[in-house]
Image (cartoon, rainbow, N blue to C red):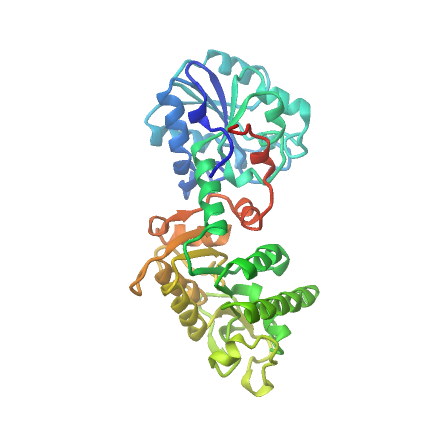
Length: 428
């Protein structure tokens, strides 16, 4: 249950509402290549307009490092938003200052104004109180709906709440409710699939899932230090030696947990390897173990050297077909699946072309989650690379919940407090 007040708990009629959205969308020049985040903000924007609020939207785009740049301007977003809501969207060339203040004052109920990128000011990311006060100037209410930034204590996420009554938007409520429910009260069995590049980024979520999931699988470069810990010579695969001790600790914790209850922690038992990350690369399949179930769950057992045959210069770039099938089998008997991180390098995939050579493991996971094998569990998807890939495949609607926040969803799944949420008013 979401514990913060939302726009439905207050009267917004005639009020000037400062809405923090997350419009950090991908651009090709001035063309938006994916409007998913803008579309996800529409329920809140439309609710405010229907209830006769004056809507002033602030957001960031990219990493301009406190310097104005046409490359990171929100002007294309204003045009796209206007198309989606079928209403004019005014645009201010700055988020503070005389022009912005005058445009805010002139706004009428049912009208929308989008302010320029808040990160054009270095004061935004350091949560400068004076900048936050300037953002709040001329507004009556603050509405936080940018889930992708609520894990940051910035001026437009936390600072502004000190100057205005502050509540949540409908997207923020949905994100927090859905992810929290999946973590705290899932319909079981619960399968967690965690990929990505670095163990350091996922250590807390891995540790949490060891104690709440029924099946936990890892893939992507995230699996490499775990394979190394089991005795696999991973050759040129992406790997940070500092993460080896972390991987060993996690393997030990998983082994102890599996002795207490039915729980499986699965690391890849085969992989797709190549010497170059290129869609034309020659690939090979490599087996790491005998693939018996006893080996799969026997975490401390080292892998015999003769079962591993990576060659010099080769990199592990995707999970292999056995690993993908094993994970898919778990998904097919699960009622809830939480997925964060691709199983391999998906960047070589093109929207109109065939699936990239290192995306097949990710594709099998997608097929299993979306019901291609006969059962469709409730699915929660997070992580920038994962979401970006399923967006490129036009498959967003095939999942129950696709999060708009990468770091925010990871922090929430890990059990962290989110500063941009904590700063909002409680329902009671």
